[in-house]
Amino acid sequence: MPARLHLDLPDGWPRGLPLRLEGVRVARGSAEILRGIDLELDPARRSILVGPSGSGKSTLLRLLNRLEDPSSGRILLGEEPLHAFPVRLLRRSIAVVPQDPRPLPGSIRENLLYPAEVAGIPPPTDARLADALAEFGLPADQLDRDASGLSGGERRRLAIAVALMTSPEILALDEPTAGLDPASTHRLVDALDRRARSDGLRTLVVSHDRRTAPALGEDAFVIEAGRVVDHGPTAEVLRRTDAEAWSVPDGSGGPLP
Ligand SMILES: Nc1ncnc2c1ncn2[C@@H]1O[C@H](COP(=O)(O)OP(=O)(O)OP(=O)(O)O)[C@@H](O)[C@H]1O
Picture 1 (cartoon, rainbow, N blue to C red):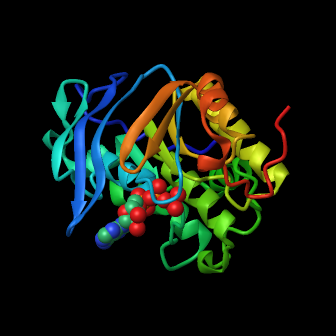
Picture 2: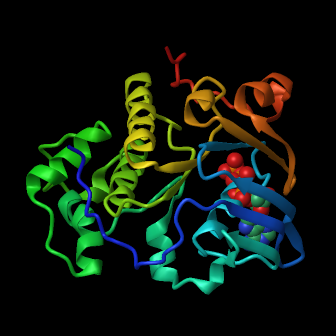
């Protein structure tokens, strides 16, 4: 059974609501990174975000749990703007795993225990932590290993396992399959799919891999130069999107069954 802490968010915490970006702009100095993003994440569907390098995908993810705020425009969970929620709870509800997550100093166990420590609840047993690792194809017998020694792909999978300890409603992932071998890619896609079906986990995945993209989300948004230029069912969007524009095969994906 996957390890979950079941940290209950307060009564009345909004669940099952759309997440909506309206006219979102982000400027850094004189550079306009996002230039009026309108996008809605349907609570019942998983989405992918595709687009060329530098188009603003990572920046968009950083807005979702307020690692950064828009220069203008609004982001709404249901009808409420994100800044109406306590940021600590918001980040429990909407988890964002960056492309190159850095583990906390210490062992893999300490990283997995961190959410329980922050929440002040009893730590999960080693058996549950081992399950959390196994779910993402990480060696379950290496809890004592120093997390800083993990490879990039392993660090990303550990960060996903840590993020899922608190059962977020929305999980945003920046290129989670980049650099993974086909077996690890399939395991990750399967694990996310299982969580979607068992927990209703909604994902927004940045992906450059046309082969795995359809298995990661039913809806696709294409972002170019800071604007959403296309969206719709993933298969249709892929058919009409210029492959050269965004597909950077990482050489590892392999076709999914
Ligand atoms: N501090 C900054 N000042 C100016 N421009 C910046 C700054 N930080 C990022 N950018 C630019 O913002 C743009 C969007 O970056 P972002 O990382 O969101 O793109 P991305 O679509 O995720 O790219 P990739 O697919 O390569 O990860 C890039 O052109 C980047 O160079």
